[in-house]
Length: 342
Image (cartoon, rainbow, N blue to C red; front, side):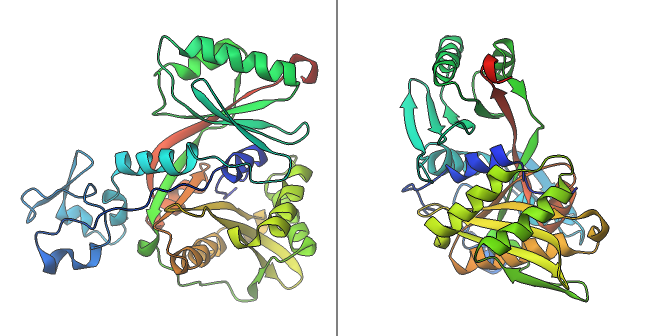
């Protein structure tokens, strides 16, 4: 399937991410105005030049200019400073979680930030700051907390989180790993926003219950055997409670919904999140996924968002990377379920 992290629990963790005060700070240091004019919006940490006539040095890697000029090579990917993006993402998104929906609560505990879902839905640990000495005690405290609460929790682990063996420690106490996703980021301005759809296909904006039902019809076909009423309910809530923070769209072939996607705008941050990107099997390979990326990139650019971010499953990774996205981190959900609920 082609999707940007459409699994419901992961969606909930992004929906809990939020308002922060960090913004892009400085323009790119440009020693050669003629050569660098097209990249003047980049932060100072993103590019360092060394013998520019032959190489670019980016994020401790050397790239020959001949490689950057290959038509099929996503040159923007080489220009993303992964360390700077991770730092901005942690500060603006992971460490500034908001409730995001009625009944949800955000709590800071020792070493973690957790988003508590309403009712019996899956909660999420969105950020952790642990050491080798503190990790086991903090993990045990979270298990006790959610055991007493009687609800499952997803610990969303990024591969740069510390300590380095945090995944093994989670598994040792009963967390179960879900599929790994690749966090991809692109500069919004670098993504082609020209929408090209197959003949007979149009894009319909989702404004209410009927549109969400069309999205969920696509979801259920794309994720055969994994329907999610919870996701549909949350999308309806998003449209009702904060329509300015999300744009949903369905690709229609006549009266048939064939693909669906959404973009979520986190106010006060540099990031717009791409979610969904699901296409039903008979319509895959026709460019609809690329068209939905282009459409959402245009929306994010119009609102001034600097980065597009997607947690990509294997099917969508090569498409997104060809469009100009670059890997920033691997992320894996680790889910713990109270014994009585298993």
